[in-house]
View 1 (cartoon, rainbow, N blue to C red):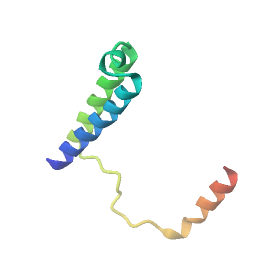
View 2: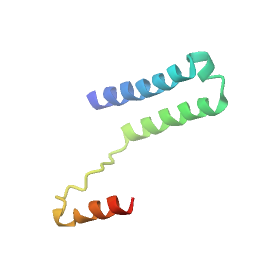
View 3: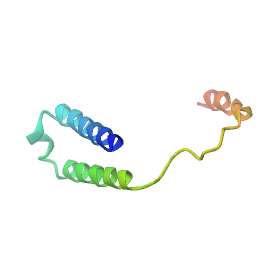
View 4: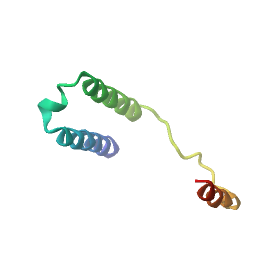
Length: 76
């Protein structure tokens, strides 16, 4: 239950910051694309709360492959 509350508070917080950046509630929701974005965000948030998905594979990571971080930093 607390995970759901934390997720919803975070989602409302990020959307609230976006609204603040656009100048308030009315200017933000005057754009149809932003309305669709908010709807999609809440649909995906609800799907994430109802799913049992997990980013952790439950296995410990092999730390011998950390050399690739340096290689990617050089390439970048």
